[in-house]
Length: 350
Image (cartoon, rainbow, N blue to C red; front, side):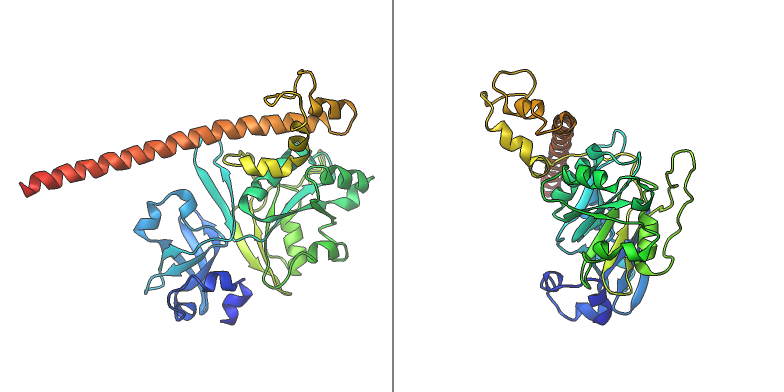
């Protein structure tokens, strides 16, 4: 079982098995997803498998993704079941899609990587932090390219203000000697997902932590000091000193849905102040007795932060309503199909 232990197998997953013998035969962890092909690792080695018909028809979030623990059929060629997850990092699909897309499962820590340059944006970090809270993982903000910044401390302070108590580490992804703080978050059973915009140095960080090249990296563009997008699919890698890293491609869009409680986690300061407003339905705009606006006037809270909070609330409300409508339509359609089958069976019986 050493193979599976190195892949992060813990009692939470073992306890879900009805038959312990499945550990040596049919239990596997998904290490890569490329369209319809999935790569898994079992006790006996790596395999490329497909999904069972039931999983092919399942909702996207019920299908296996990178980091999932799954059961294979007797032929070891098909995934039949997905074990209950400890966490799931997901997002609303890009563009006009109203589907929730699973990104990485059973993640313990989410490394949110951003650069100490023009790419750094608090509003984007707050969006990642909300999705991380919803996933049930611990966030750690990694400030890459710290060696190129004139004032790293300002980026550290700005990052810390995105969520109370959030951990922040600085790094030069090319220099192993600067990664002690980053490494301290990874132990032998920890699964970490690397997320962030394209070109912030995720692949470089992964390669340096691994001690050798696991994935290609891009050159830095001179005009804006940004790297080029290199990761094309999600993949789980084991580190030589223990622990696992999932490299996630940069996402152009990071839309949110179903994150009501998570926004409360990220914007706890604003929500705490809101309870002190004169009116319970205060919009924190121009109402008299608004505690939030008073905090902005005294520079206790940045107006940008309030603006992003309102934006995420609106986006979440709209997307969540759309999802609820789609789910209801799915239930109505399922009831209709069931009723048609019942009528056909009744007529056949006559």
